[in-house]
Length: 413
Image 1: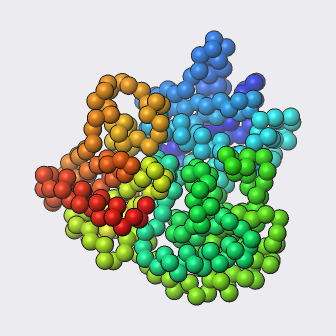
Image 2: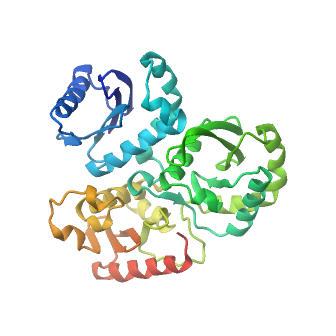
């Protein structure tokens, strides 16, 4: 499966950069020129070409005012046309985060811009490969979070550390997901939070302390902030948004003092990161995994139960959570595309090809030889569950509703 991204100037169609991810070969230049040419031809007739598809790929175009035209070509099994729109916006905001909005909107020297924009390649490549990570943010537009215990001690350590850094914005990432965050961090736009997490995950693991200038696409698109990160343990990083002071070296001296008492709690969270639920939270034995999200808080909780490994072993499937995650993603993509009640975007962006029935479905299920799936919409919550094939079809609804209500009661998201 391949993903292709091309950036060109909106005014003249001058190529700025291209990224090719996956096992596909780069598209020939005539094909890229044709994709841009048909888009520019439409603009000349006051027609905006937004999307198209071929037998294997979905294609999306998006032009940003006085700036850049992005063309994204993805395998149909990865994203629908509507999700491509959101992914293009995330890509553009990722460039804003590292380059600043003013410089993107006024490209004075194309050759210099081509050199300077390379600083965003790591983040862009990470975004284009989200489908193969443990994140669901590319299709949910929500922040991936952890829901295990030990929240209070970690929150206290984070609050004390942000105070010492004279910062209001801070979060703790464990295995690339948010465990705790300050209220000010959580008040940032959901895409800003998502991009900051992706930014941290895309950075080199060495050194353990990093200080990177970033622009917040909505909050501060033209004034840079300092994104300061410290690796506490392998897979655990604390992130701060700071002003000019204190310096990185000054903060680095304070890390151990504030976080040493929390190391055991972090290790405890890491020990159950796949299940991502406290041990005393009961989950039906037929549940192999689920994704729960909230449209109000813009948070997403994913879980892979201990039964999943045993089930996969019996079926000679991969013994890790990758197969469970792929099946969940595939089910989510099909449901979101077919039923507007399950989409995470503005309903006005969706076509009405399926008529009024698109917005009336609250529960969806599918049954396959090796597994069964169930989706339930209970605003502002949505839940997608993967079951083992042995569960009776009639029982999926009651099991799903019971699990959803228990998680809502615990206020994990």
